[in-house]
Image 1 (cartoon, helix red, strand yellow):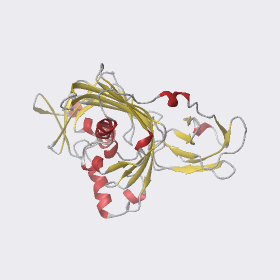
Image 2: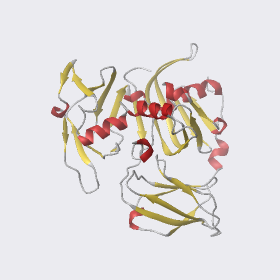
Image 3: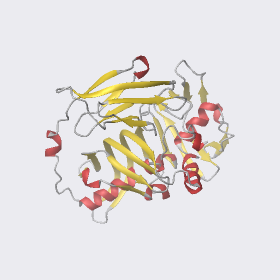
Length: 339
């Protein structure tokens, strides 16, 4: 992967309020309760399941809260973003239309399934020590297609992906909505692929594995966090770029980042508005180089490291190369065990 590779990961915006949200999940047609439906806040460790009556209760206190996802195999997912203004509601799930999946059969596109899986793992899980420690348990559910004319790899899944991150000790349930890699250069004979851009999005839920409290795991998570996009955005929000070890340059000359970033006070929703004057080189403790640039006049960021819009804020270099295997849940370090 080259330094000009751009990564776009779609995440849903979040807010933080202390309360409990309850509801009941039923089949829309039969009105029968759905047991063991997954209920979780996207990209966090906060989740639960419905009981035999389809009832659930989920607490969100002073930690990250994102869009609430209700998911059950064979049914279309439901997203709830306005849960603060309602409670004790009935959520009706509709059976998914599987007609499309039935016709998405793979064909000879110049690459074997094994080769496409290798390309997918590289760009989805990543090539770092953390990415290489990941294993997708249910790879058979992946549908992979290579488009020779557009030099692009498209991937979808017939089920929620189950990913075990051995190094960071997370089990990630990733509901992949879309995945696309566009290549700048391809040679099918030598199997050479030079990545131009990577775009993927979906919802995810993180669960701690058995060794989550081990000192080695805590050290790995800390290493993955520092110098990440999430860490950078949190530092930008708190005005602690220098204290957190970031340095900035333009045309090889060290610069003051606050000559390039204009940051406005926190609004009623907990966001700060940020404007970037022009492309800027970012160095985390000298040896980790990245670049940030924008195609939008401004973006919003909160104290947890969430920013929006996602499209229009681009990272390349080290930050642009981070993938699912390098990521942490949005409530990382807002849990007592991680402070």
